[in-house]
Amino acid sequence: MRKVYILSFILLHILNAGAKKDIAICVNKNNDAERLICFDNIAKSLKVNEPKKEVIEDKGKWVTTIETSAIDDSQKVTLLLEAETPIQGNYNSSTPALILRCSENRTEAYISWGVYLGIGTTKVLTRLDKSKARTKTWGMSTDNKATFVPGSNTTFIKSLMGHEKLLIQTTPYGANSVMTTFQLNGLNDAVKPLRKACHW
Image 1 (tube, rainbow, N blue to C red):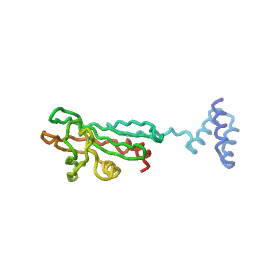
Image 2: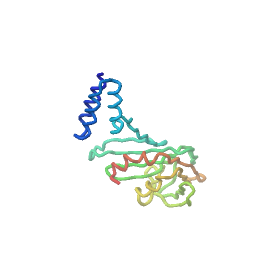
Image 3: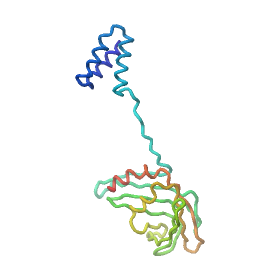
Image 4: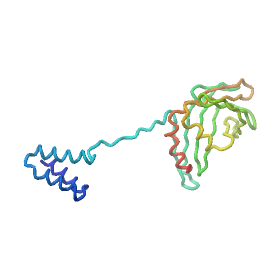
């Protein structure tokens, strides 16, 4: 009985005047079971008893870090994705990482190779899925172990979205060319906080 009156109370507060007539019919039913069925039918027609749908995001192997900038209190969002296989440099082996970042409303994209690449710039070959491979000159980090995307970082990140695999190749200093791949699955969801932080 208590369940019946609780349900009627909820419905009375969400229905318009016309629909309240249906509740009046339910209230006047003498049998508790019939009354409850009547209220359940109203609830079904209003879809108030439908379970909430949970949206499950697929972020793949992406690791997201969100911090607050000490400069302007904006969100600093970093996405990191490790390569599928390690590479061998002249002095050591390492597993490269693809890093996408928004810091103080500035979008950055680069690859941390983890091995010494040389000085200045280096050629990097990239290929998305089955598309044509492209070789461009990438800038170098101060420790000479990372390369920065040439041109628009935002355009580069957008070009990754919707693809499954990124193949990369470069030649470390004094070593043979090295190649590895990144599984991009989940980027569309993982990149959302970065896009929000950098307003694109």
